[in-house]
Length: 231
Image (cartoon, rainbow, N blue to C red; front, side, top):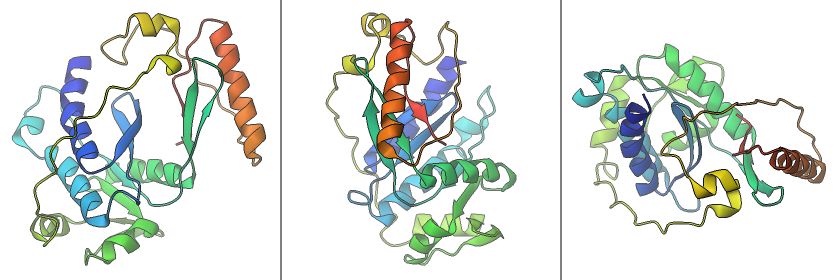
């Protein structure tokens, strides 16, 4: 199973990074991608979405031993982020845009093309004459005819950018000693996972201090806090 996940993730990761996006974290068979508006225009972003969607319509994906379907949730807005705790550090990305994207992704399972987005990003799509189909208040989708239009639209048919040769970063400040010495090949490993839910404080300093204390306590007891997920 991990091999199958890796086989599907690899081309999708290349699509995201070749269109000026980045992936802060993976969650099982899903990942969250961010496209900063300072680096990515609506054409590049739309082409990335189209290529991810098209990948799951390829013969390879359809005939895979593991049936895989795409669910894409999209929104546009402000994302907050921070680094918390002492080494090994943890990090977080938060904001309503992340929660909205997760909601859209859940709604996408009921749409033929597996794509749902909010009115916020629909407005951006309309600037390049891509019409949307409403499914309920504040949520929209594309029909197959619109997806075909994206492929032919001037400015969107340009070939994907060459894959970037990204420098290999130093992960050690974010890894526990166990993983820094023996980095596993994937996320699936023998361990005990604990999911902790809590109410987010409106005071950013209190919020950051709380997360820092949590990371420090986890480290003290031999645990490992990879990241905080606010989707």
